[in-house]
Image 1 (cartoon, helix red, strand yellow):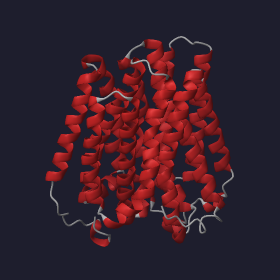
Image 2: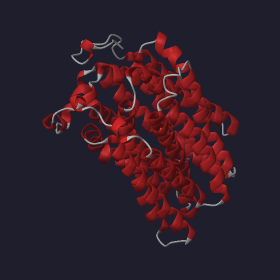
Image 3: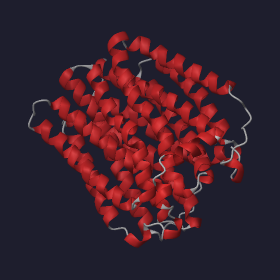
Image 4: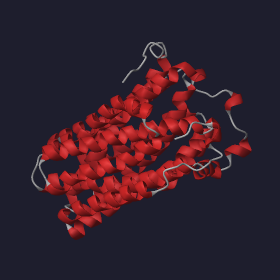
Length: 413
């Protein structure tokens, strides 16, 4: 990945913002592994673990649009700082509850998971705008390359650490998560406030900011945004079911917790490799072609998962899933930033993520009941068949983009 760091090396605010959010994500993904493991260990119920996964993803259904309005209207840095405080309190509650063996532990865990999920929604929407606020135009290409590497790094370190340290003590992943929230809060507090606020000329009027439907209209009138949002939402649901399937199978077959962390963290390794290769793909292929091809590659990768329970095979395939996902995300992010007006970026991103990421919550809930009802063997083939149908459907869609008012002034997909 060709990244010109010379432009960014003098931007202290960017590195504070990026490192703080990246560290916080590491803790979050570690806790995200620990939440279902904790519930499975205390209840021995895949359905209960599914409900905790749903609690982590449910805020997407509730707060996605409000987070976009907040990102367009209020100081994004202040929102990020508030999020770190709230997340810190939530994970401290879980760690304390585990240590004292509190009654109704499952309920407390679900509440904390819901709070952390809410924090994640607001941070995810506000981060891109906050990073733009601290950058000059010439610094943005290199900065966005760092930003795309943030998630896979967090997945790699967070999942590996989460599974490993959970095996040492059930409360430990949440203490580590709390420490990462604290680090991020300090890093954000050190950013110069005058570098993180959009100039008044860049801000839309109050009436425009109250227009909740502005982001939805941008997405609806742009064919690629509309089609990819729906398709990726469905694929996210399938991938989320596969995630809980892997976690459930590895635990029930007797593998230690660190093995689970290693297998699931393979998506982070794949994601980093995907971030390295993404510029090559996006320079040669359209965003439309990249996201459609990703569905077929995912289908191929789900075949070994359907027929094998070998941790090495599962890790390789899961790493491939992560790498393909990052390449697809890079292509679509570049397209989105290029054509969406800045004053509606938060609401447009929120509208897309409401559709695509809400599938994460629904997938976690569905996975728990599917595994409890049919068992892992059936679920393996159901996910493979569903991804194949999705890939076929996307391939049969119109190959030529239709004229769009949004895309008229921007690049074609």
